[in-house]
Length: 325
Image (cartoon, rainbow, N blue to C red):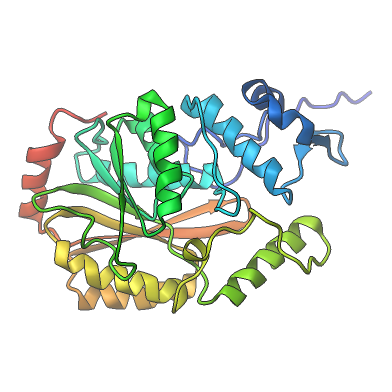
């Protein structure tokens, strides 16, 4: 007689050790937090509970449940047609940036509201500020070129008292500027985060959404689904990710002493060399590449600083002493 071995919850590979979402989703737990999710829970071929990840409403409600259950949100929503990002991947980015800060602070992660993060392209979802304020007590500035996205993010902030005074959204009125007009005079930013638009055109963005949906449904999808892909500024820009990151690097030089660590996600490995060449040309003092992964998807964080060792020490003494975990 063979006894079946009791299986433990399967971890999602490659997620950061501090990520709250390493184990498979406990849908009973999440439905308790967000009862609306219940109608989207089904059984998979193995008899386990799941949701249809090709259904944008199901994905949005899963995100809502995760944010209520794990990040103490009283309200979270996004307007139709806006990007609904995966919470585990966004959390991973912040945990990796926390480690980067800690590695330059004698192994202690700087925490508390004196630590300020600039989220370039905060989006209607306001995900990075929601996670970062909860996990590390950081303060956030969120910038965006879309007034609707800024209004949505502000609605989330206003409806959740724990975000009050911790998150400020600023509208970028010049779409070609990433930092100018957002970072104010004599303002210090400990690090920046960014999810750059990946595609170079609307057609490429639509094709990418259709490929994603076809993979999820295991059959070819010919028409995009409303509210799955995101707005134009979230998904594509002239020149795509490579040009966006190149512009960010060039513009960051103007704020060399205002920011300790600049960073951005780089989705495509082939874009990394060009970005590193641009950083060398911009005379970045230190460049870091941090690999990340979620399931079969891989990505990386590219981070850089223009501060010398002496300037880094002065920054630590000014901003990070007494606020480390």
